[in-house]
Length: 260
Image (tube, rainbow, N blue to C red; front, side, top):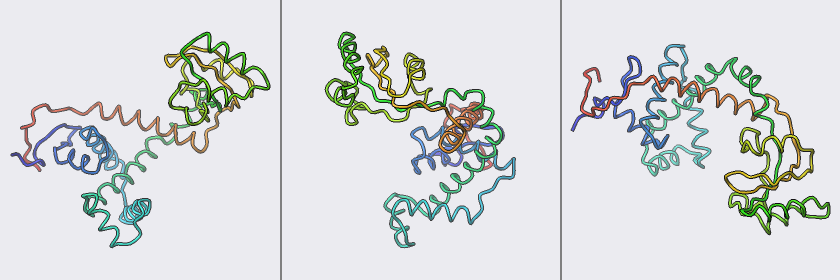
């Protein structure tokens, strides 16, 4: 059997992505498609090397300690036992943590100045509303629910408990919480974001069924906190996908290179 270090699965520029690289990603559980994860790692490594971005020893150790703490591990003995239980070595942990640190730094580099541009062009997509809904299959029933919900004495929560067929909100009595405009079905967006706080809209049909929606509040997005991080993720993911698309997949599993 060929040495996994010498079995090349893909090329990204001058970098060869080996079977061993993919197996490392699989072992660390980073992605179900571990070849894709290996390609993404190569993109991050190439960008970091080109731009002089490094993960220092201190950063790697601090991040490893925090990672272990999040998993309830607070001592060196416990760390070794936990790693062994996961089928990992200290080297595996440091490899994963180094990748995490490098990825965060590359993300900051790639998204610098781009987050504001992206948000300005699509600001309305990040407006959000706090919603509850009732979804049913029968349009006549949805009309009846709407009329009942319009009654100021009606309890929308009780109507949802009685009628809502959406399994995702069954336990919350139809409460969806804050929903970003872009997450809503297009059929719902206009009605929801034109509504006044406390208003009921619908029935509106989507592939899920007929919706009657209680709009608790509507807010305009601002580029701070969670919204900034979400936009940064979108910008970075789009960049990463574009860079990964440049990788050449090699379908011949027996092709080897001598420099490993």
